[in-house]
Image (cartoon, rainbow, N blue to C red; front, side):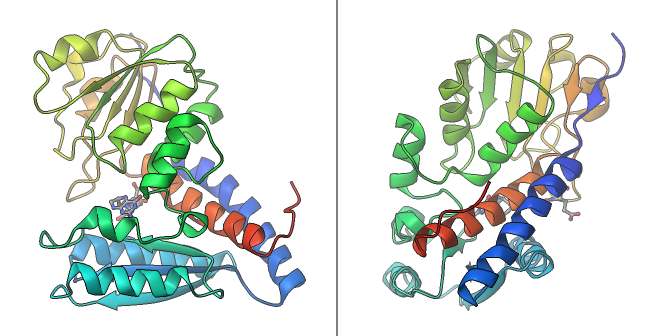
Length: 286
Ligand SMILES: Nc1nc2c(c(=O)[nH]1)N[C@@H](CN(C=O)c1ccc(C(=O)N[C@@H](CCC(=O)O)C(=O)O)cc1)CN2
């Protein structure tokens, strides 16, 4: 089997961002204000600080205001819910991002669910998850939605394919399985208690690795010609897939960096601008 074709997430994200930048400029022309994303960061975890900085830099580049809300890691769940509720009630804020993970003593679900549905541009609330599962209108979780954009950009139609999602987190594995199911894939969700993971992966036409363990998915497990999506962000920009070995068997594969990451941020900004138009009740032009 020849080496896999690389999925260029940076190029897909650039297209999304260019269109989003035009829409943000249009919003500003019509309303006199930029679309605004509030970024809430609890504590100073270095990776989270970097991701929030990346998101804010991208906002600045494409005409979106970002309002940063740094909070100490001693904050209580009640105080965090209070701060997010304030942002939910502030008409000058169109989208809210709470950077994950929050410190262990905080009830992250309660904090996510304090984000009002119309400002949940990161797609993390229970309401957004239900909308995703039932196919109602709502904002999708950014990483899974970005992965669907990658599949579409490379003409990968999930219909009838066997997709194996490795990981069942609330912001990645679970919503990913919902989006693939909505596009008629047959979905298997694997996790830490799955017995014989390699046999599941060996049967997969599409593999989405979202485990958070460097090079956990071995290249030899990959079915020849499969589409391999690596959604892992591990220290040192290493993904969850053993890339070199997987690339000798896969048909298409995402690199780390330059695969899933850039589309995660592009979808976040796109949804922020969509939220701004909806809150002002202005129909956004295509
Ligand atoms: N509230 C959320 N928290 C987290 C999310 C999320 O979608 N919402 N996802 C991850 C981390 N993440 C965004 O927050 C993220 C990580 C990495 C990238 C990215 O573009 N990485 C680049 C490489 C970066 C570099 O050069 O250092 C790449 O892959 O090309 C984007 C977003 C956890 N938390």
